[in-house]
Image 1 (tube, rainbow over the protein chains, first blue to last red):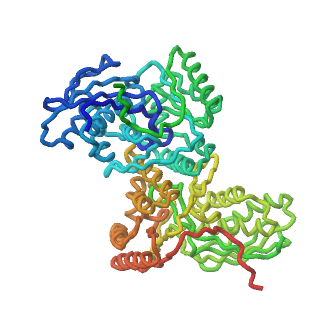
Image 2 (cartoon, rainbow over the protein chains, first blue to last red):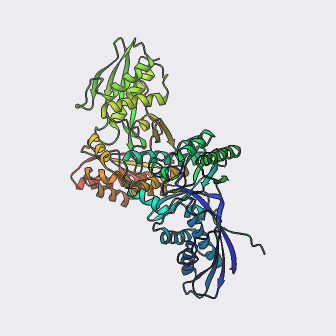
Image 3 (tube, one colour):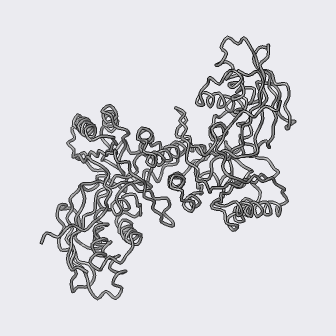
Length: 315
Length: 315
């Protein structure tokens, strides 16, 4: 048991084309850092939030605090000791990259590690999901699970919650472009929840998500690329991502295997099978956003095999 | 080039739980046999249909004839020689086991083989689908593809048509029970086509079909079993299969990995991981149908790795 540590939890791309609410993957960067220490206080205190002036430091309003509290109740039911947190936001909010999930996961893992790491990954997932549900009203696990576990993750079922880790072909690269605009997740989710769908739309996504999974297992990246199609939610969400059609066209023209919106956007992801090409794809996507007046950030690299982790102590 | 031969094409189970219109598998039995010989006639003649008095021997009304004609136009565009067919129905009609698809496939393969086997599997699939579309108004490939190719087959996309063969764990067994009643496919499909679905129903099937595919690749039959869930069409179609709820309960109580309706029914399938248990599951399912006054046929065994094939000549 250590009395002070830092945990990094990565950003994540979710949906991944055909897999609304059931597919997500961990990025190598960006991500959030939560610093935590045991303290002779009751419950959870957030000392400071850095990197995002709009985020609350009230532990009941901040996903890192809520998740930390959920873990604390399990690892120390008598509540004899509390925990102080410093939440370092190192990634954009409302970006479609699982910002609140990264904070939830980092908060949950930090407290668990401080108390000796007794909770299972499944229990930690439950705690981070509690925080997501408290913050957004819905417990979707497609950001929380990859941020916690790393890799490409499938949520087979929400009730009961069952997570399946999928294999990641070594050549696979992901390009994420975050344009400097925001999409409100709650509004984006409500539009999808209100919509009713034809069976043909579901059939299209069923065929593609099945091929997506088969291609990850067999390493067939061409098939994988063809499976990055979404007939259900991309058509609804594309309207909130300025120039999405142009950005996608630019990505595919530059050699992307496939391209779609991450989560509820505005971030857009593309897959590639090679480092050099990833970089060219990122250039082309950023240029397409620039044409519409939007600057952007880029994150390019392999899928992160690691999820949340304790950082080496600097002292 | 032979001038007379017999082709067997197997029955198939389709949908397989989460995979409406995109998953199907080949059974070892039953199946249809089409006998074919080259003849100095124009086009296709059906000499005889055995085993199903209600089926037309008009080659433009019978899927074996339509598929044979589609192949003939490609292998012999000048139409210098025609073909005579004998169609032996060895399986029930309107059973949910791909009866018309088996005839289509057998007709297509028989003509192709008579002319030297020049068409690719993909081209044969197209010809068999033409027959299905002419007969039923919709070209769904989830029976035709497994009957032609064998194994467990995914239709990633209908336009363009792309088929992916999935691995079949060696321990996997399938139980199909065909109760002696009929469901009209066209009516069953129309009910699904008219329905509108909530995103949560699609999400449930997306999670399960992805797990289904992952489990086939990893050989995890427990996960495979949990993935046999259908929130989209099983609830609509269950009403047309007498006592379906009881039959499914009986299958699961007897140790089935999972259980659902094959195609539009009335056949019900279950998966198992062992020969002895398959037999007990079949007993329990047949008994549940009997309780509601229905006798039934059973087909129990491995998934057939082989699809349509030329039978050894008896002469």
